Amino acid sequence: MSERDSQIQRDVSVDVGVGIDEEADSTMDDGGSGITGWLRGKLGTLGSSRALIISLVLTVAGVLLLGGLLPFGIVSDALGIFVAAFLYGTLAGEQRYLETSLAGGIVGGVWAFLGNLVLTLVGPGVPIVVVGALVGLLASASGHYFGRDLRKGLTQDLDADSGPGRGP
Image 1 (tube, rainbow, N blue to C red):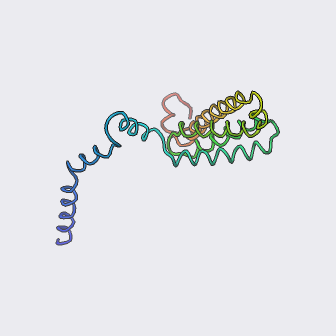
Image 2: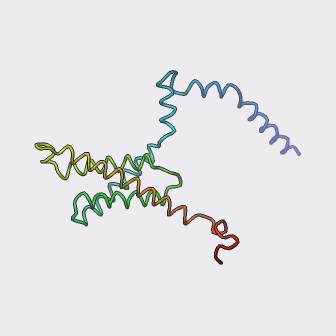
Image 3: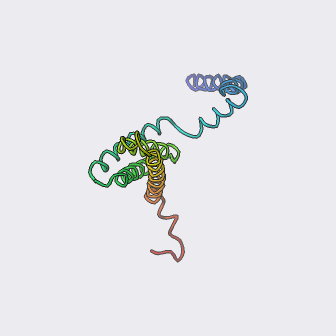
């Protein structure tokens, strides 16, 4: 009985400790007041730096593997970005479209820049870099979408789809 009383006492002390002071502290730690605080609050919920780093690593690995194996230039790079984003979309527990698209755009642009270094530096190579970034962004967004779709199909409850008149 004494053990249960001490458990109740600990629960009460924890419940009493959490209260109005914590709410006041959380409003003070929003990152300031005004527009900057509002932006930090909104942008903090949009993405995760950890997910961005994972996306970047997977995307670079996909471009190195498929871009190095297939001799089709930006097409093989886009295929590598797509496969990496597809894999990340299949394995990730949450939707990470922003991070995956940003990583695909960065890697696509950098790879287009490095693949056409001389043309970019001395000629009209900037459009090539922009096209590479856009292709990488679109490939990663669509790869992540199809990966999420596969994950949803694999993890969805089969009993929810079957009903009267719907198959065996």
